[in-house]
Length: 111
Image (cartoon, rainbow, N blue to C red; front, side, top):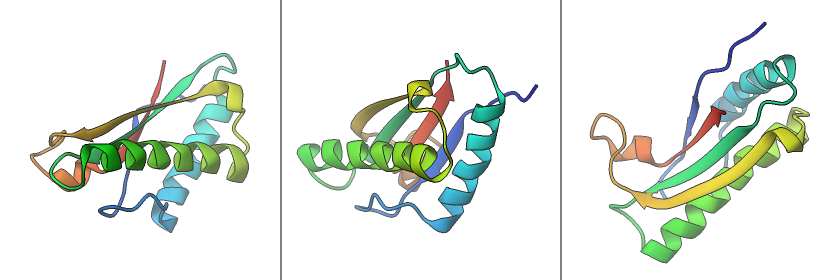
């Protein structure tokens, strides 16, 4: 049995497109999800860094980022959409290592 850990995908400032590196990491996460408990639910939470952009823009950007991760997991890697939930937090202060780049992210956590 595989055990899932949190997964972080970071984004370029003001962008919501996934890089190939992010897609590769999501492919690995998809394998873990599909081989695990079919009743497990994973929350995909989008973020933007509060230091750039407007509050409204960061809200939209964090939602787009979460949606793009969801779409990749479902459409590219065949994860059951019933196992995924989308959330988004808008602009946030630095979450990791006082580095705003790491707050331009989507974090996927198993529940």
